[in-house]
Length: 420
Image (tube, rainbow, N blue to C red):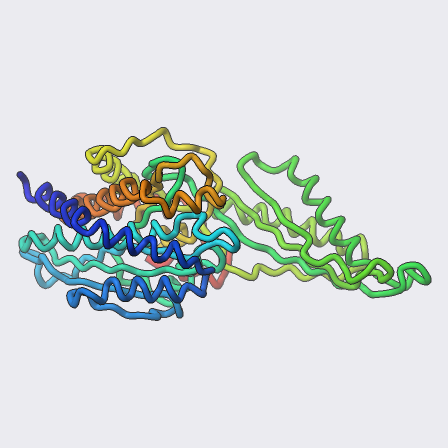
């Protein structure tokens, strides 16, 4: 058996040997769902999990209150000793959704990240003659559902020393890549003037009229949008009571496009609708983008092919990839900073994410076979790359070419996201 195959076998044995611990880790997080930014129990549970092994250096509350970082190595350097270690990162998510718990299966994402890291560690412990030393980092990334915790971590430099990054997300199928799309949130506030709605309405400036016009403007705009673009939202505040001309209203919309450069066009069209409503009613308008823009995921063909090869060897059946997947993730921003892979995996349910049925499936024992199989495939893919300098060069070239196809970021504040 060749050395990479022995390493892959060691990774699989490790994951199998620790399957009960890993399932308990996942169930513990699943049973105590916490919203983004408040994942104190999940954070503490993962910190304890890695702290039990003194080989891991663990930093709790890393950059963000509920983020953590666990590192192992470097080890395995042979001829390349003296070179900086190749830092392979695995990401854990663990935030839940309001009211329905882990309906996106982030407890399983945490389990996959932990299991894959343990598997790669076991693989590396069988080799001392790699072309350069290898380090493993597990990064806990909170608040994917709401604030884009990975983006805050990127801007703080938490990804600066990574060479490769891996994570996997539960879905309805196994896929090495699905085209997650760009999304940005916009808040629109209209300021008018209050007046008695019956006695002297002419003294007022109706901010609700502005909000309704803006909503209808956007509805009309959809006819001229590309089929894959999305624009959806709500009126969050429409006034105080019927006998007062509303002096203030607020809308919240999400804008989604397949790629970053498309979003610039959609934003300009949407803002024209918002401003036109203000002009028509005499209101003052404020347009703000309060959160981070989630970027589309850049594909990496080399990593995807390696993952498919390893997954197939483990019995994963990859279906034809959907061209119309419309989910969004802050891993997209990560993919602009470091070469990475974000596959999706089946968990033995036909239920859709963000439903109560998916919450139940994410905590079920029958999801474990598929979850741990995915973790093995990620660890085996990492083994391929750390064992072969040519593959590492090709992964980096795929990353460079994918970035060339993208225009510069939309916000000055996000300029750091394209740092090499």
